Length: 107
Length: 120
Image 1 (tube, chains in turn red, brown):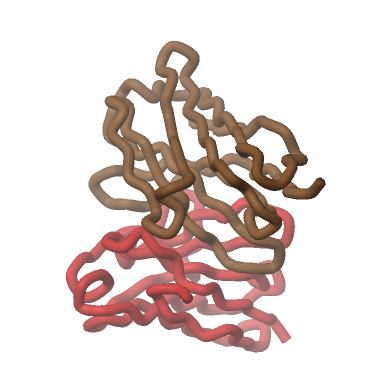
Image 2 (cartoon, helix red, strand yellow):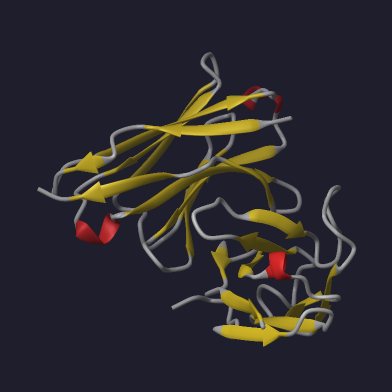
């Protein structure tokens, strides 16, 4: 069982916005601004999308944004595109755990 | 551009030791500032962090695997390695090596992953 809780699945239509939550505890997500998010397409290695809660690596679309409130971090994808369909994982410092992953379906 | 590449047997017999090596190019393991990590993914499942090593040799392992895991580093070859002992079918997974930024704990660079199957 993952220390970080994510919804198993989310869906949205092209152009819409979706948010994926990642709930931890006051010992991990709540204590450190060190949450990262990864996108994984089938058969591929994970790709870093967000780090330190809300920072985007170079080359990542600004349609991806991150935030945190209390013990819950969130990844928001705006202007959904078909290519965004993938699995998404959060990760937090302390505990060195990944979330269980969320499958995003673009309808 | 940093690149990581896993290598090792794709098939391991039960009770034996799984051994993988990650070769790093485009950057030196000895430069410091990073945790060189192993992460695995069981078929159709999520990511599981196995452990990491710092260039100095300091290690930290997932408590659930700690008794069976050894991660080592060879700075002369710019490689780090994973050994997982007493494997069972439950250790069948895709194994990734990755680089974590030590001060921020995020994985910017990943290997492509290698599937290791445990079967007789």
